[in-house]
Image (tube, rainbow, N blue to C red; front, top):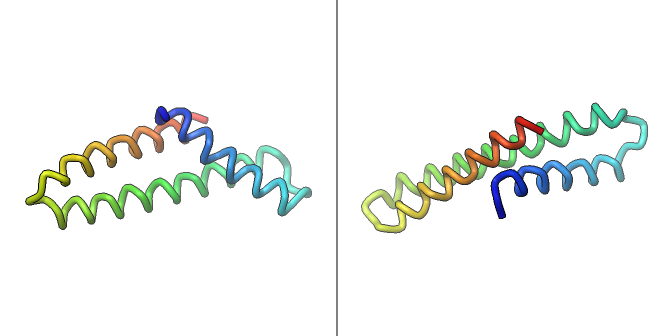
Length: 82
C-alpha cells in the first residue's frame, strides 16, 4: 500500500468512527479530528520504530526499521495534505 493510500485509509477509518459516535459535528470538524487522530497514530508508530531501531542498531534488522520509519513519515506527509 502506498503512503498516500495508507494516509487516506487511516483518516477514513477515524472519520467513520466519528460519524458513528457523533452526528452533531460538522463534516469539516470530523475531518479535522480524524486527521489529527491519524497523525497521533502515525507519530506513535514512528517513535516506537525509532526506539526499536535504536535498540537493534547493531543488527541488520535495523536497516528494515529505517525503511519502515521512512514509509510512515511519508504517510504522515500525505495525511497533512488531505
